[in-house]
Image 1 (cartoon, protein in one colour):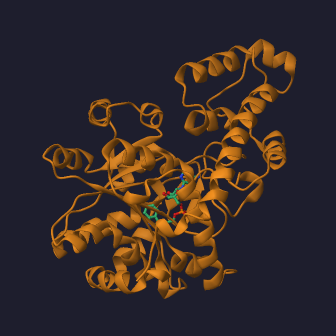
Image 2 (tube, rainbow, N blue to C red; image 1 turned 135 degrees about the vertical axis):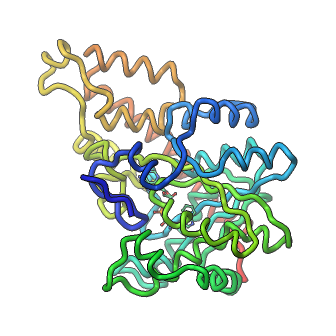
Length: 376
Ligand code: TYM
């Protein structure tokens, strides 16, 4: 558990003003240096705005993974989602980047939907609910355009036989003190959570289990998931496997302010991929925290602050990949030429264009789910 002066990040709780620099030293990950970024870009054959802008800002063992890749030892990708609600746009940050990695490195992807985990963590959801939500969320994965010949989607309770066998071997090597410290568990935590991390670990060895030889694995994820993989990495070498590498992103902030994490449990601060254009408009106009001045006059004179403006940050993190256009918006906002209301309209237009396409692909994905799902 990370618990600095005023913030906390675990897979089950993100609170306070997240300081990403501090998190690197607390979690013991490595920053993505300019040199490492250039190396990724060279191997990928192009640059990605989420790397250039430091949205993916930290990693574990990435240089090792790239060494292996250069030696011809290809890696596969692993990422996932805990289906507690409809997908929100923050979840798409790691998935969009994962899609790019799949395209650029020709990598296979295992995508895990943890209906078991969300049954354990969500008071109000039963197993049927989380299983249904897993199917719902899988539509968003398919809609993003992953290659069906290279992508497997696992819903935990539908792949339990395989997962359970491997999870047992991992669980036997992890003791209670370790998970207690990593996740901040207390005496009242239900015991399902204590075992659960060993289930989330399994896809990081699954290709090695299947092939009977060690296969490197790269896990793109938001930084809150790091504790799972920190625990996983400690034990896998004892079972004869590589440690999985990871590449980790900052959070898309909630509408209320730039320091936290967008979360499904707070609908007015969140845009779901299923939201209508009017809902998007209403939420952003009403709730998006602004770095603008209190009056138009002052704003024209003093300019706004894009660094704390949620609309600008959403454009930077996800919705305006074009650096030139983003810079122009930034400069206009700083100078006062662009008003908060106008900035919000730029964002609304971008999100609604994206969601219109996404929702159409999501509809079509209903007929294609079976090309991706695996069961045992
Ligand atoms: P979940 O459902 O909480 O989140 C899914 C993925 O989205 C990331 N994420 C965010 N990224 C940017 N901005 C946000 N506001 C934001 N909120 C969430 C998460 O870090 C995650 O990458 N236990 C996992 C499911 C899982 C998983 C995995 C995730 C199973 N295996 C492997 C990543 C990699 C969970 O509940 O994720």
